[in-house]
Image (cartoon, rainbow, N blue to C red; front, side, top):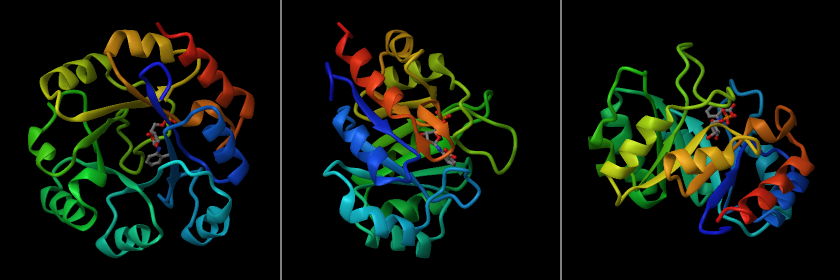
Length: 216
Ligand SMILES: O=C(O)c1ccccc1N[C@@H]1O[C@H](COP(=O)(O)O)[C@@H](O)[C@H]1O
């Protein structure tokens, strides 16, 4: 946490990038297991770098996983589980919550612009990750598109007991504006910190530390 702001560096596939994120002060390290992601990592590769990862909470990112897949991730020792999913999966949401626990579940509903946030989700997760919407059915995150900051600000104000993470195109260039406009206290940096999908730009990771140090 820097100046009261937490951040996650997501889309990691290499131990050296994870180390750079830790040195920059990241609160969470994210690893994407969605097979259709260009920055995916599989469980075997994750386990091979695991001994070289820093002691920072790790987040497994998936899209609507079946319970077998989720239990494999759970078995790999992740601290949190960020699940993106299309709206309307109420039974699945309940099952994910039962499996990993409400405190460890981060729900990232794929919310079309005209659809209101469903407060029932808060029964199942203490944390909501707010991401950009893309029409394409297989696209859930990592697009670099900005999410709806106004809707985020409103949802965060309406449900202050919940932890709200702002995602979607957060970058060193727009992070300060995002904090100011939304009141967010946790940001998710992903594709904006890359040289190419899955490979981080260490200079841009360290820029995050510098800019958050300047927040007043
Ligand atoms: O990054 C991906 O490829 C991805 C694929 C499927 C689900 C989530 C994914 N990433 C998450 O998307 C958000 C926003 O990323 P970006 O800033 O738009 O690049 C972030 O939380 C990632 O964890």
